[in-house]
Every structure is written in C-alpha cells, then in structure tokens.
Amino acid sequence: MNKAQKDGAQQSAGLQGDAQQSAEQHDISQSDLQQASEKAKIDNRERLREITAVLRKHHITRGVTPEKLRLILEELGPTYVKLGQIMSLHSDVLPQRYCDELMKLTSEVTPMPFEVVEEVINRSYREDWRKIFSTIERETLGSASIAQVHRAKLLDGTEVIVKVERKGIYDIMARDIGLLKRAVGLLPPVGGLKNVVDLEMVLDELWSTAQEEMDFLKEAANMEEFTRNNQGIRYIRCPKLYHEYTTSRVLVMEYIGGCPVDDKKSLEAEGYDLGEIGRKLVNNYVKQVMDDGFFHADPHPGNVKVLDGKIVWIDMGMMGRLTNRDRKLMGQAVKAIAVGDIAMLESTIMELGDVQGKVDSGKLYGELRDLIDRYGNAGMGSIDAVEFFTDTLEVMKGNNIRLPHGMTMLVRGLTQMQGVLLSISPDINMAEIATGRLKEEIWQNFDLKAEAGKAGRRIYKAAGRSLDIPPLIKIALEEYLKGQARVNMELDATKKFSQLMRRLVRNMVMGLWVMALLISSSIICTTDMKPQVLGIPALGFFGYMLAFLICLYVFIRHWFTRNS
Image (cartoon, rainbow, N blue to C red):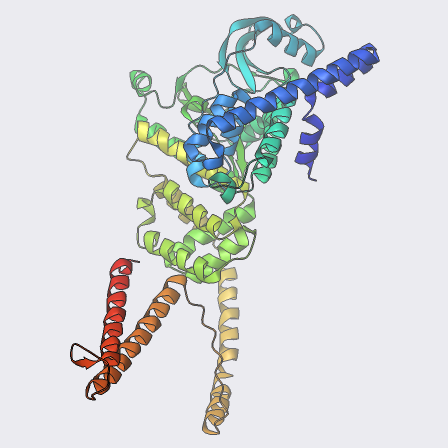
C-alpha cells in the first residue's frame, strides 16, 4: 500500500478521527465519542448513497463519456470539481478527450462565512488575526473548492492577499475519495472510462496531488523558487511572499492589481503593445520549460497579469517539473523528428517513458513513422506545438508507455498558453520561438573537441568492423556452394496484412473448387448417366449449381468487405 492509499484510508473517516482527537484534548466521555463515531458512520453512509444515486442517474453502467464524467463531478459538489480539475492534468493516465472535457470545470463555489475564515486564521496563527492584519475585507476576491482569497492590510498599511484554506477540506476530500473508491468498486466493467484506465490508480494519483495543493507551504516554496529563477528578467515578476505570516493553511502575499493578460481593451488603453506582450510571455514560458525545468502548469489569464510594464505570474499551486534528463531527451526526440530518424525516435521515447506492459514494436514503429511523416516535412516554425505534443502523448499512451507527469502538465500549460496567444497575438507561434531557443542552446553547448572525439571513435569502430566483412562474405559463399547455407527469417505481419493474406488464400481455394466442379461436371455431362435434369445428368447439374453458388458467395463477400 503506497503513501497516498495509507493517507486515504486513515482520513476516509475524517469525522471519526476528529471526534477521537477532540476526546483526547477535551476529555469527552466515552459515550459522547461513540455518538460522534456513529454520526460519522451515518454521514458516510448518506454520502455514499448520494454518490451512488448520482452515478445511477447518469446511467454509469452504460459507459462514461467525457461529458458525462464532467456532469457527474459537477453534481457531486465542489470537492469532486477539484478532483476533476486535478484529473485534467493527468493525460498520462486518462485519455486526452477526458482531460480536455474536464478542463471546462470551474471551481467558483459559495464562500465560507467570514466567521469561519477568522476561525481558520486564528487557529493557524494561534492568536487573533488582528495582531497581524489591520483589516481583512469580508467580501472574497475568489472562492474555490480548496481555498478562498481575501484582500487585507498589514499593520503597517501594506496591501496583501490572504489565501485561506477551507475548514476541514482535508478530511472532506479524504472521505470523498475513499467513498468514491467504494462506489467505483461496485461498478460493472461495462464500457467507457473503466475499460481504458485503472480508476483506483487514478484516485490514488489525485489524492497525492490534492495533498500537495492543500499545503500552502509547498506553494510558498514554489513562489520563492520561481522568483529566484526569474530574478534577472526585468519584464517578469512574481508577488512578494510574506513568509513570516504563511502557514500550511494560510498564505499571505503581495496584492497585485493590473490587467489580466487577455484583457485587450484595458491593455491597449494603457498603451501596451499586444504583440510585444505575447512574445515576451512565450519567451519566458519557453525559458521556464527548457532552461529551468520548473514551469507554471496553470497559466490561464486569471493567473497572468500585466502591471507597470511587467508580466506578473501568480498562483503557484500547480507547477510542473522536468529533470535535465527529461529535457535532454525531449530535445533529442525533436531532433529525431526533424531528421526523420525513426529508430532514434523510438529509442528516445522508450528511454523517456515508463513502460507499463508489453510493447508491440511493429505497432510503435508504424505509429512513429506516421508521426514523422506528419511533422518531419514541416518547418518547425509552422508546427502547432500543442497538437504535436498531444499526438506524441497519444502514441506513447497507446503503446503502454507512460510519460513523466511533468510532460503531461506541460501539454496542459501549452494548451492554455495557446488560448492566451489566440486572444492577444494570434500571429505568434510558440514552436518557432522554442525552435530558435533550441538552436541557440545547441550552439552554446556545442563542444567541437568533444564532438570530434566522438566522431573519431565512431569512425574507428566502423573501420574495425568493415575489416570483418570480406571473411564473412567468403564463409557465406563457401557454405552456399556446399549447400550448407541456412537463412532464418522471422516475419511479424501487421493485422491488416494478415487479413489480406487470409482473404487472398481463401479466394484462391474457392477458385480451385469452382474450377474442379466445372471440369468434373462437364465430363459427367458428356455421358448418359441417369437420372437427368433438363436433359443433362443430375450430378453434373448439381455440380454446376454448386460452382455458381460459390461464385455468388465470393462476389457478395467481396462487395461487403471491399472497403475493409
């Protein structure tokens, strides 16, 4: 059992755990504890009934389409909406069409009462919030399933944003995931999502990701790392983090006004060049991916603002990572596609991904060849980057090769970046900018001495092997002349080719049958054999009829299968 499963099991009865902890702290009687435990069990049963009722309402046994899954999650409530949003990041385990549909989920929910917000802040600081803030606005700036945001002022008058986690959200999500596992276990394996993905594995992944997002100290660390990575870029910034006031449940950062990056009217009214904003935005995003290996995985317009001539990245709850090895292999894959080297692309993908089962080499080779045919002849600047990465992911997923999670988050980030560019600067091509940076990096890292050494070693090995060729040819010819030559061949035909060969052999056999029947019937018809039909021997007549029926069968079968 992995850590996520253990945590889910421990927290799935969150109310029960809360009751026990409360008993220890406040010396509650055993009878009160039992009542709280019974209440938790009743609540769990009621929630499980709600979940199964929603699943039945949407006829879950008939299959789960992407749209049906989104509607189910919306009806189940805010915590499931959040799960759906996290699921949309996992195109490595979910089919892409499900991820695309789940990206439509919005997490605006009814905010917590301000009294509850105060309670969460006071409990997190272990003192009254008024000792830190002079004011906290009662109205929220935004309310999501995990947290909500309020505008506030520190005691010195500095304007800040306070992000407050929903009370009890950890236990609620743990309970709901545990109950959803139970509900999914009751489903028959009929069509839809359950046939194409291991739902229990997906739920474990979701719980692991959700736990990270519910820890604001993790987001604070992300903000600090992002700031360090971009501190030398004058047109990029991140809100200042007030680390001394940040806890695992409360995050305090600088208040950022400005305009959303896709607000064309406001940006133009302030004199901004939309093309310049688009180019700088893409340049920085490519830098995050290719240079830092640490990038914003949720760059929708609400998380990217323009203020005082700078692009401001906010909300670092969802960040993607790529190791140096991942980035190197990604560049190698792009190079293989550019030069049309299928073998190099296949070996790179096998090295980059995690093979989950048996890989059909013939199928993988054919799909990679199609990929190269589609993108290899196009200039890199004209390629749709999102479509390219999505197609590559689908090829890998279809061959039981799972990509690093960072790459699936990259596809989501690129999709959102493309949407922003279409809004403000549709002429900008992300692939063209990325190609320019890739060429620049290749020249910067080019080591003539090292490359010459590698080339020399390859030439030396090739020369040594070439000396072995004449003796091998001599041995092969001698064996051939003596009649001792043997050739071992292993053919791995594709499914379509195998069907074609079977059809060809079947038709040939049918043709031989018709020919034999016609010849034998014609011979019989030259005799006076009795009985007769229409003046010819009955045996010959039936032979002709059978030959006719076989020809009719072959014709009809060919007619209905000519396009298959």
